[in-house]
Length: 203
View (tube, rainbow, N blue to C red):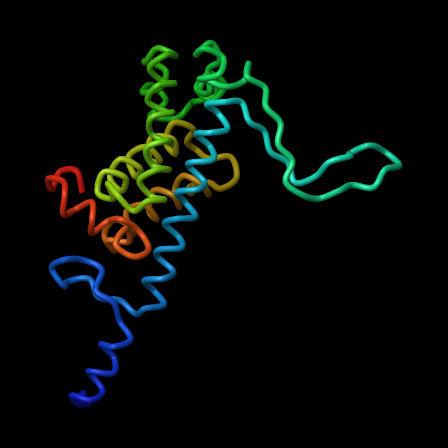
């Protein structure tokens, strides 16, 4: 069935080009969904960094005392001794995880010193949080985030809740690649601006 010029024009008006070479064209709804997915995942990583760096705990409930009504809301507490930065780097955010690794890639975190594990981990989640939330450095975030999550996936392989798929790290690894290939940082992000100011290896 031939597509008339009017139909093609109508279809084009409902789609968005996400890359500068006009190769990635998606429906507007897909572009909005990719942008929301990118920002949401960025906030997940950003919160993980802030929480582990400064010992911030969050709960949506308070008053968990028998006989008292539970209240729901945003409840935060801070214990500086549990933060990587706030403890003066005395508290390790990775030690508990590394002790439980047993898979074929477990040697990667196990062979590094605790200090390097902590540094690489905090730099990775902080960098992913900033890159995804702002829509910059998407190629680095996509490839680096994919490799990070693959290492985490196979450092504790086989997974505990599924014989093959690690529900969190498998999905995050593939989503990060998808967001990179879609140029998702260019919708509701600073991707185009960042790309215009930086060399290609920093895109």
